[in-house]
Length: 249
Image 1: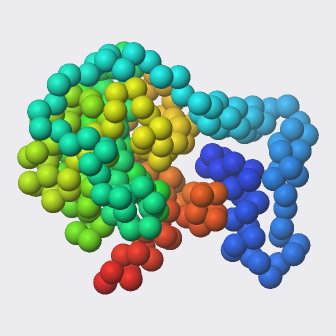
Image 2 (image 1 turned 90 degrees about the vertical axis):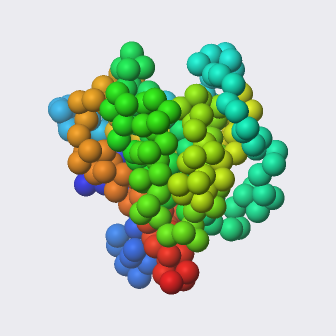
């Protein structure tokens, strides 16, 4: 029940129990049984909340529609194309390669920065409020990456949003080389797109990020990194990431 309230899917709950309690057969439960449990609950606020969460999960795992590639895009000087990115980024065998994006708030007047490490799916949420200009974004991203060990800061793949126009100074500040995806090609940053879908479960469309505290944003960041992922064999991003940090140390 607790994990359902935290937006974990029934499949995530079922598989995580197998990892944490492999010796306890009595605790094992299938994801189908969890779905059945939710739908046989008596009518009430709890049932409505849980069903709403499941519907949001389904909604945000659908294929995203691609809009006008040129919308809100401008020419970025001296940008490096994703085609020039090191080959090691694509196969995810070497950690330290990130994807980034902005989630826009109500009326596109506020934003939340999202940074996701490709190998571990470890996520950093960057509070921006209404300060989504290129200088503010560069400084906020650089500050966020200070929490990451140097050896896990290699590249950042971004779309061609104008907020990354100061990418050259960002590289000087952080040592992270920025590569730009092709316009209208969200699949080139698929890890970030999928993570943004999870984030929307906590901050749905229409959220005004000027009204969301940094404390609440970091709380959601902790939830995302403490949430088991199928792609990680139902280990959590923070477990995989912290193991890498320990190995590097």
